[in-house]
Length: 413
Image 1: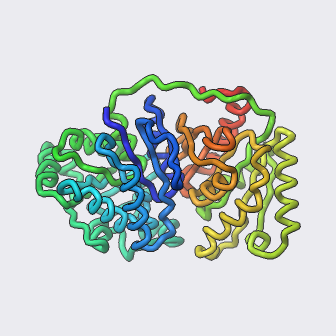
Image 2: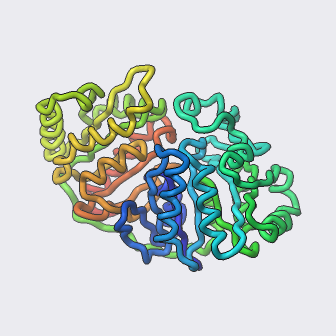
């Protein structure tokens, strides 16, 4: 089987795509930065950290990443946000331009992730059956004026053709994909309402020539991994730890906030609320006291929930600044970590960088969109990452329980 290179715009997305292959026995890891670790693994996911960039800068970063990491024997998966945050059009255009250096490029675009309520009908994304434009995530953060995927790609000059559900579920899917592949320099936008629809797309694409690259979210990654033969993967093991789990909620999504409230109410963690003003202000003593208190709590074998508190109308422009400020404040906590979890790719990436982590060896998926692995670099602890809008009110409780079991027994099985 050929290997895979997954290029994502944030950390949680890189992880939830790579684990689609990892949970079926293929060794998989997520990495970032200039020193990409574990390049020889069959499945390498790279966090380009481009979601907050302009279209031009995101395209430039993807061009650089592909020049460094793309190889002939690795099939390419361009991971995008399932609700079109960031710059998926510019990144797709950059990917096609890179591939076109060796011949016409053909992309299969299927962003649906049915397990999390994201589907695609008539070339438009729906969230829980409603147009993406009506969803909470779109109201908080969107790049494009519409969720029509052909129009989105068109903003970056990418030519496309929509493949309706009737085509995906009919007898002409493979022939249609073959026609588009022969035409070249085009993207086929595939409707999908169910995981079976995604499986049909993956199967029909498997032997199209010239081979396509794929654009989508973890739903498509699972479908592609599912048509490959499963392998028997190794069980990751670590020394058991007496230290507690640090759980950080930096995402503004309602799903993460409600999950934090449920975890706090469970009585299994100590809640450390952190005001944005404390992180962005001049109170060095308060930030040092936070790190000291969290370190002491973890050192006693207890779990800590650190949450950036927000009002009902948060300033979206402060997201990266807050994540980095919190990471700076908690940098000294690393030696007391027994395990780590974070919601929101930006938050997770900032903290891991301060902890001296340069990658994650993936082991399992706790639930759709929640990846489990082992950190690589200066510390080796179990880690769970979750996109902010994924999951339900009890997701953080399930994550906390799973990480506690792993760190106390020293095994991911």
